[in-house]
Length: 304
Image (cartoon, rainbow, N blue to C red):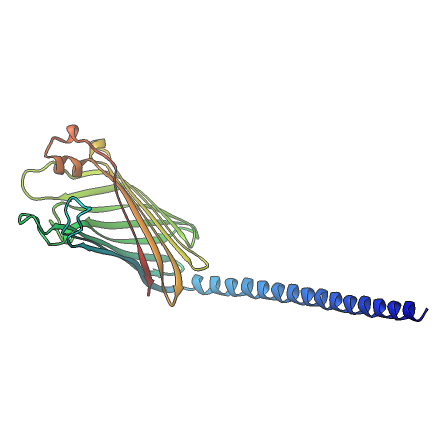
């Protein structure tokens, strides 16, 4: 009997102890859920306040971009067809903006630079250059002014210039000047629709490049999702004179911030331009093999 009583007491103590621990864990879970709910509410309030700040009139300025590089060298590496070689690839992109947002009008200005260099040097070949050669060379600036009709629509005028910086500056160069309407359904999306746009094309010598009247459409999207920044821009020109004089460029930038504005970035771009293809191939415009142009860059991202 005494042994049974001791066993009963031990079992009772065990169940009381287990019950206490279970209650404590349950209480902690409830407290954690309460804290998470409070954090969620605070985050919602913070986003609402930031939205009000973003909606205030005034200037918005900033810059961001990506830097990527890879270098390699081989000495007496006999497993290669060229055992003594060095190679390198360097890419830099810079995107900046300065936007003035007011109740009755807006003035949006932006600039983008994409530069890249590449080299493959076979040191056993005296004719092989050890210098870096230009791989990508893109320069774009634009300025959009809009007079608001209401909160989402505005009468607008746009000036956009595109060329190269390192090689053949302004040869060709493209200058779009036009007017029409701009739609801003949200603070992150701007859509320009200009049925009256003249595309000036500058080039030297006897080339296939021609200026023409047409329609201009630009869609620009910029947003942040936590640490991820996203920017996409589509710029299209449709010539009324000849479809072969039309062109479009689509660029996308993604940056994930890890520490103090520095993180990982990825950018890629697509372009279609028959005039550039014909000039490169030295053929008539109609005979050009107009393949899709593209570039991409992965590396460290930064934001200012």
